[in-house]
Image (cartoon, rainbow, N blue to C red):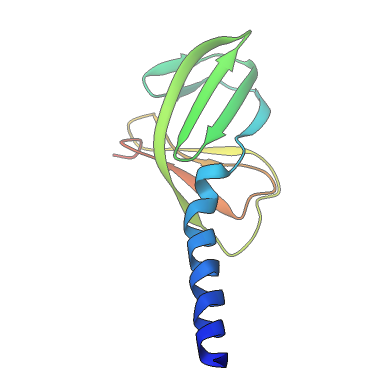
Length: 113
């Protein structure tokens, strides 16, 4: 009987872990660019931009206008980032976004070459 209860608890916990990302709330951050950045073929000038992160998609807006949408994957790291930063590939496109307070990096699909 005890073994069946343990199996039940473990299976419920495993299911909860699998479906929880589907119910995760989007993260929204305001990031001020001090230098122009090239994201998804769009040149972003200096200014304040809203980054909305939903699953594997980052949508960049300014004044409620969508400027770019980036697809990518999250890669865990062993520490939380202290500040927001962008890593640019040799092609001049942003290949990686590091968000302050996150222990993961958003790797942009097609960003690095």
